[in-house]
Length: 366
Image (tube, rainbow, N blue to C red; front, side, top):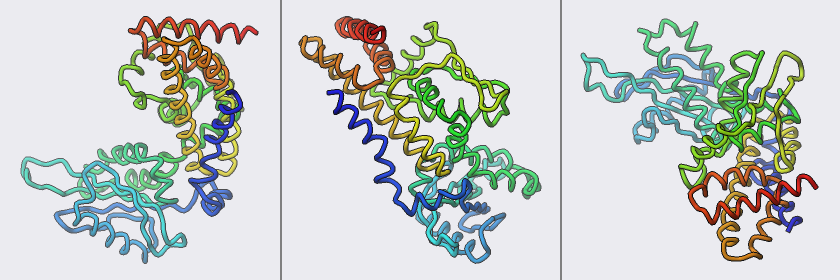
């Protein structure tokens, strides 16, 4: 049982390097952190697009405008919702991933029927596959531009809008890379904190570092919103808040930073090298896919434990299999935390989980 669990765990780590990114993808990111990336912003009025600013070469921008016009005519760009596709432009990359979003202007009392007016923002870089790993971050970044676009005739173009657009890749895509570079092999402590809903506090650091860790990495690594029952996360958060476990603290006053109140397990430790290898390649897209694989494996193990617990209510052999599974997966402490929260109103299941908790405690002491 243990060997099969180890095998599937290694498969889950390796799946990205085998399937999702081929050798050309990896080579494209192995030398530089910053690949070629571009932005463009258009004013959209009725059916016409007017260029406001772009970092694209002059020969490529009209090609992008034609593409955007075609998408708008088909109703493929909805207000506030990003759209990611591959576009072929006169660039060294030729085919490039393109994120587009229509930011509609607020209706004024003088023009209550002015539908469709607004700005179209485009970010280009990497591949469609890569950008599709960061849709929420890209949407949020575009929304952060909304207030800056209210200035008449965009008088703040050079002081606010252009610098903001120029940073889209650094701010929306590179945060996981920066966190792995910051904590290195201590990344397992953050992975465990995310799975167990443990708060992480960053001290003596700038605001971007704090946001990278707390707002982006921990949120991206957590299973919030992925549980089958919406109440599970809320129940677990409440249970953790009532627990005596202290916050994980990252003190950035020294280099490397000092981490205190840390907890990890064999499951989280097993992912360290995969993250370090991807960071060494400077590949934020590979890093994100590894993080998604990490979450997928954790979800699969949670579902397996729930199935074993249901079976163990009727079979002592199933209880034995449940103990074997928890011992083999290396993530028993986190799985039991989640199971305890999800089955809090089921006495039979709670009894099974208490037995499993005792078993894990005995194994840890041994």
